[in-house]
Length: 290
Ligand SMILES: *[C@@H]1O[C@H](CO)[C@@H](O)[C@H](O)[C@H]1NC(C)=O
Ligand SMILES: *[C@@H]1O[C@H](CO)[C@@H](O)[C@H](O)[C@H]1NC(C)=O
Image 1: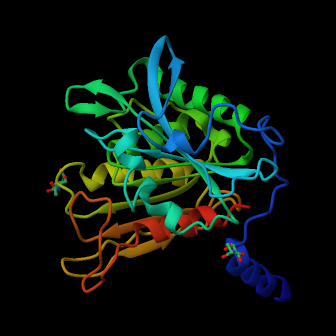
Image 2: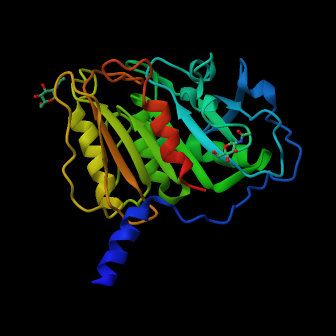
């Protein structure tokens, strides 16, 4: 009796993630040679990956401290976009820098995809975009100070599809992903036997570009990988606010799905709301890992 009460209490507390000791990258304690404030501005930086010259942008926190192991957050663009587009403007890097203060700090990487039938995107031909991200992890972590236990990826649409494939391909190298209206097919396929990765995703019930059925498939893949108990994820009817489903999973792999009444958008708003929940939910999800 008492033990079941305790077990219930522990389940309620289940949201608190174990704090892992920081795993400082080789760039910690060194003055950066490559990545300075200029890495966030055009033309960004370039790296040779898979024999091709690829572009990326990096945003450091103000007052970057090379002894502080920061979070590393990949912010992947949608089709037709670029690293430059993600890195630009007041809401750049999916608006996360406006939510993550400089004391907590994060280092953002916004690479540019390659040309494909619909424009520049994450076509990941022959795994080339997975290789790019692996090469960027090395390049960035050798130069600046990253906590290697705190790597994340997020993106909208093609950037979400790529974040899904990164979760499949990199497994425990990533701590969590936030997949905003993605698809399980457009950046390659998720091989069988993949590892658990903490999972947040959201999708519009009326998405006419990437059907929500693909959003459910990606989510279900990680519900399985993350050992979550089956649970119905309710979806809102026309005119209703979003519905968030938090699954009960292996403790280190929280899994959350949000369905909203809307089309293909990175910044859905509830009826009457003046701002989106996407950035807040992404950071709320990522910040639980320490
Ligand atoms: C930054 O955020 C952390 C975590 O939310 C908080 O503990 C800290 O007080 C914040 N610092 C500032 C200067 O706002
Ligand atoms: C998504 O796909 C389902 C099943 O094929 C279909 O019934 C539905 O109309 C599609 N939704 C949109 C918004 O296209």
